[in-house]
Structures are given as structure tokens and as C-alpha cells.
Length: 294
Length: 297
Figure 1 (cartoon, chains in turn blue, cyan):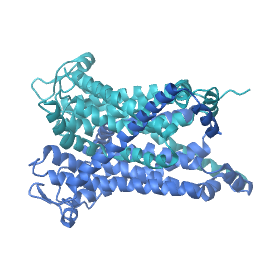
Figure 2 (cartoon, one colour):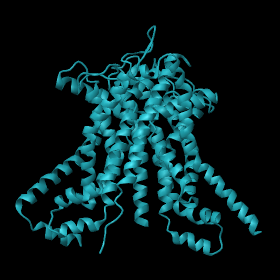
Figure 3 (cartoon, chains in turn yellow, purple):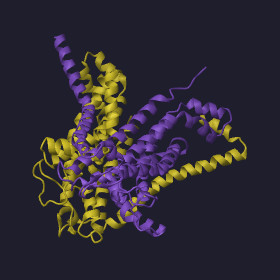
Figure 4 (cartoon, one colour):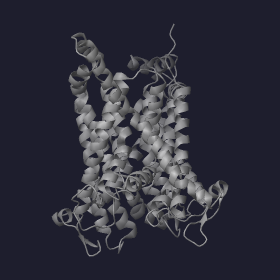
């Protein structure tokens, strides 16, 4: 259909055709700039960072006031924090999405909840940091700890989880629900046995995306979980940790010898990027596969 | 038996309802704790002096808590980044939604998603060690860490937001509108400008507002790249200190529950209000001028 209309439209005066092709090149150029930006950033990180990465770098703690050695505690810290965040956000977000999509009816309550989710998604991460500091660290007396950081990050990623989980639930055909209800199953049995299994793969993709977001987040953990330097590998949820993003910031702005430790900064940034982009790629590829199977 | 089932169903329903209510509870709690920890500063300075005072010297004696330079910096950085990000984001969205072939789209869309997923600290680091020396050499300026650099880095953080939402808006314009325009003899470009873009205007403006909201709240980039001088800038190459940068940089040093600590929480309040306003506008726009469908005969 649109092919034949296009052919019709192509039968036009040269001037109009010319202005069209100029504009379309401009649009293509804009898209290329985006791709270039990504490429340039990756290029500089890989070029300057790959030599810093070796076995010692990945498995040893920093030494000599963080001018040499590795980033092992930061990796551990980031893993604990982001997984902790998911333990908070995934059940909460999925349950919220189930309510919104399966139970809620149009009305004031639904509007209020939607308003909350939209605005929560817009709250700056540094404000989440302040909130975490005031509520978890101070008021609940958790101190600067993995627990406080994971809770803060969990609430920060909650809107992402809710969004993707809702999309996953909406993609489950209504015929599934009707068939299950028609067989005499209760609403809960339908959700638990029919809807959730069908939606789970897409939900997990959202979980991975949120996990990567939590792993790269800095401002929210600056006051709640991360410290400059700690020798201790965390043994309890009330321990402070080092974290990859915060480590980059510290080395690049407040390190003992900023110019000398440049390769460590590049190395840390590269490790973080590999972690984050890796998780995103997994999610993207997995999602594409799911779409094809549908 | 059936009443027991009924009760059980109701219980489950309420459990889910409570979970769904968590997000709004957290939003209220954020507001409450910001106010609780921020308001005491107004015993020291009036609201007017705090918002419009020209001097931010929180550690001098007596301290000055005027965040006008910080607000000005935040707004300027956001506007400058929008000047780059809006054309770039919207044009990319148009390309992806209307022009790109299916195969190009399969590659280009994940690219935009990956750009969105870059951690802000990495973009800040890139701006610091690569872009700043470059700017310093090219424009022959004393420091590459300035308003211009920060705006540029922020632009690349808000482009994916603008692009994704714009693309959805453009793609959701009913195909009949485009086909009608083409059938009347308009070129693809003319249909795009006169029909498709006006029809998706509400979605596009929502995208722009949300992109700007992301830019104004972004912390690590402005913390590392903006230069950190708490002054109202006189040129685009002056170093600035936007609100999030000030909060992030000073919170660690501010004595717990001291005046400085309260002032930083109050700054957080102002930042929160700004993003709330942006969200309200976006919400209003996306509800008001919604293109619901095509009229048929």
C-alpha cells in the first residue's frame, strides 16, 4: 500500500524532491552523530583502558593510597549493591505492575498511583541520595551501609521495573486469562499459573536493565553506601563498601595523584562499561529473541 | 466455601494494592524528608534570600546561603544542552520512525539504547579527560571544564530519552493521515512536516520536557565537568556549579545537621520542585493534545 503511494509521490517536480532528499540526509546525519558519540566514548575507554586490566587488577585491592593495585573490593561492592537493589525492586515492582494491569480499574486511585510512578521516575538520583541519607542512614540508623545503599537504589530503579513488567503483562493475550477463568480458576490462580509464566521472560529483561542501571549509579550511593577506601571485604549488610562508579569519581577528582593514576581510572571505567553494556546487550538480544518467538 | 474463596481473593487484591501504593508512598516520603532536613535553614536566611541571594559561601564565617548562582547554572546548563539535544533527538527519532529501513533500524535502535545505558559517571569522566583538554586547545580558554562542556555531555545523556519518546509519538500517528497526505500528491517530506509532526506534537513536547528534566537532575556529569565555580556565568566558557553538583560535592564535608547540611537539603528541595514542575508539564501536554485517531467517512 504505502509502496504504491510512495511511487505516486515520487512523480513530482525536481525542486520538491531535492528539498526532501536534503532534509532526509540531515536526519540520517543526526542518527549517525548519536552512533558516533557512542563509538568515540567506547573507543577512548578501550584504547586507554585495556592495558590496565589484568588478573591482578581484577582480583586485588588497591594499594599505596590507591595509586596501584586492583579494584576487587569495588567490583564486589557494586555486585552486592545492585543485586541488593533488585531484591528490593523486583518483587515490589512486579507486584505493583500486577495490581495496575490485572486488578486496578480506571479511576482516581489508578490516576494517583500512575502519578506517583511517573514522578518517581523523574526524581534526580542525587535527591534519592539525600532521601536515603535522611531516611535509611540517619532515621533508621542503618549508617552508611550496603543495606541503605541497596534500598535507595531499589527505589530508584522501581519505576523501570514497573514499566517493563506492565508492558510484559499487557503483551499476554486476554484469551489466556479468559480460558483459565472459563475453566473455573480463580483470578489469583489465573495470574499465578497462566499470566505470570507467560510474562516472566519479558519481566526478567526489565530486571536486567534495572540491574545495569543500579550498577552504574553514583549519586544515589555517595551518601548512603560508598566510601573512598576500605580494606575490609564486606561481611554483613551493615558494612560500608567501595563501588566501581564511585571509585572512578574519586580517582578522577580526589585521588592522591590524578595524572599518574589515569590508567587505573580508564581501567575501572572500562570494567564498569563492560558490566553495564554487557547486561544491556544480553537484555536487548534476549528481548529480540522473545519477539521473534511470539 | 465460596465465601472463603471470596475472602481470599479480596486479601490477595489488597496485598497487591498495597504494593502498588508503595511508589506514591515513597514519593511522599522523599518530600517529607527533604522538607524535614531542609526547612531549618530558613531560620537562618529568608526564603527570598536563599533563592535569590547572589553568594554561596557555605563554609565562610558568617556563611552565605544564596543559591541563585546554582539555580542559574542549572537552568543555563539545561537550556544549552536542550539546544543541542532537542534537534538531535527529534531528528534521530524522525529518521528511525519514518526514513530508516528495517535493517538499519535493527542496529540503530539498540545503539540509542546503549547510549542511554552509559553510566553518567563514565560520561562525566569522558568529558573530563577527553573533551575538556580538547576544548581548551581548540578555543584557547583557561579551563575546558565549563558550561559548554557540561551542556554537551548532558545533551548526549538526554538525547536517548528525547529520541525514544519522540519515536513512539511519531510511530503512533495513524497511518491513514500519512496515506491521505501522500495520496493528495504531497512528498514524503511535506507529509512529514505538515501532517505527521503536527499530529505527534504533544508526544514530541513531552519527550523534550522529560529530556530536560533528566538534564537538570543529572549529577555526576555536572559534578565532574561543569567546573564548580558558584557564580552566575558571563560567557558560555565560564565554569559553573549547578545544584546537583553542589549537593554531591559538599554533602560529605557538611557537618551533620549543621546549617550547611540543612542548606544542601533545601537545595535538594528546590531541585525536586523543578523536576516536579517539568513532570507536571509533560503530563499535562501528553494528556491535552493527544491525537486520538483519524476521522473516517
